[in-house]
Image (cartoon, rainbow, N blue to C red; front, side, top):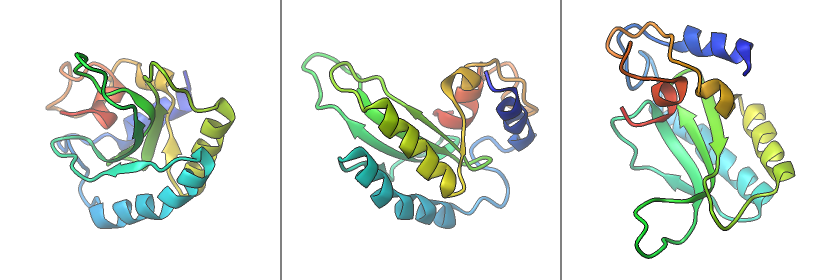
Length: 153
């Protein structure tokens, strides 16, 4: 667990805002992701899809490669997911694919390129830590930092 990142997560939290902090500029943030997308496509060697239909969440964008659906399984399997929080310029990277894996070296490059664009990487272990934030509407209800910054509310 990255204790410095945990402190950043706590600092970026807001007492009342659940989905985005005051002053969050959706258009400017989305433009940064759109500008980053071609560079990440080149690193991964496949096109990432930009999900523009996120709502009622604490993140504003997903870039992803999703496996074709499996008959009888009602779950999306991400070959690669890059999620951008509306708070703190945070992003995280994950995969739950059962049949395809992106090389670890490419994942490292994706993280470095995204950080170079001004986003702050937060690893899964840190996001799994118990939510200790200050939002009066979410205390005791959220569970962990992943849910606070990267999940549907």
